[in-house]
Length: 184
Image 1: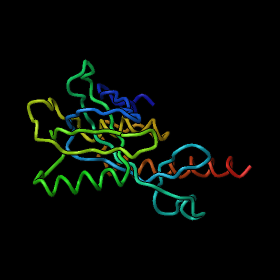
Image 2: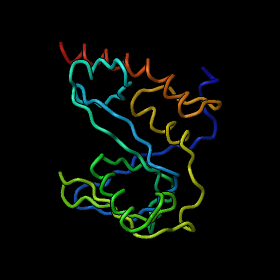
Image 3: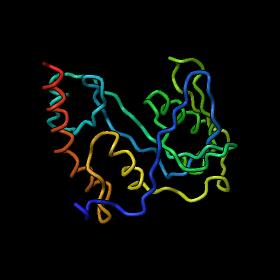
């Protein structure tokens, strides 16, 4: 078990932007990382892909994406996870393409949620390499995301694809158990 524990990986809290709130952010990761999830009995579970019990039983799915960001203009300078829905990410990606930004890396963003039930709106503002600071690597992001979905922590010697393959049985088992609990 000790070998499974990555050392010196940043702990990343999830940034919550509630209704009526806005935040200026700078992206401090190389790309958006995402996964397909299923909502079962009040909780989100990572979809293992092929032979997923939730997919087989037609449980709805959705994509959840994550960017590592730092808040600008506040005392909170620690990197945080910003969760994006597929529509929020599609809108942001389209605006980035329209405005000529090639990547999310070191991009200055304005994020807001106008009302309680409103979608998160994220607009690209400018490139801000000086404000981004050190970039957070993808395995550190997966290390922060994995507890949210009950997945095993990445190992120090693993690549992204090796970790994903190792997570599939755990994700499948968690979904099987959730379906059983939901059907009681």
